[in-house]
View 1 (cartoon, rainbow, N blue to C red):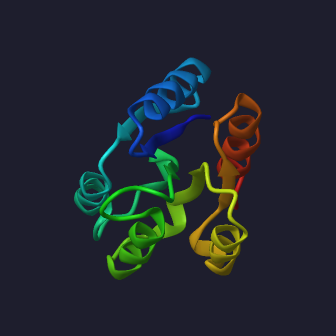
View 2 (cartoon, one colour):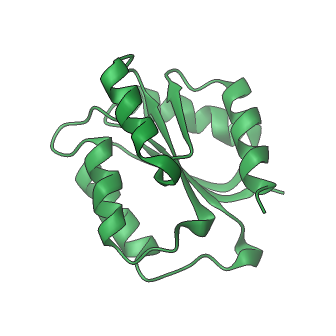
Length: 139
């Protein structure tokens, strides 16, 4: 079974391109969308998930979210998502960052079930092979 959609949010074009290439080659989702502007990403989330739930037969969505982006960082996106009426039961968020800061990791851990993972770039095949089955097999 594949994920319905993977959304890559990272301000670095090359990182988005390489991650999209990896995910497309692995064929783990029906669609992979990459956005390099945090505000555009938030608008995409608002337009695609606000007051909606993903029907069970459509599967799950996964968002890979960078922390350090100009204008709006990944933590702000997560906080703002909480103010939206989103059914998070079928949408999972994993931080994918270059930050090795203990403060960033601690902040991520403090988010509890709002965040399903914290990975250090680059995204690797092994990471995807662990994350995707765990999400698909979630009760």
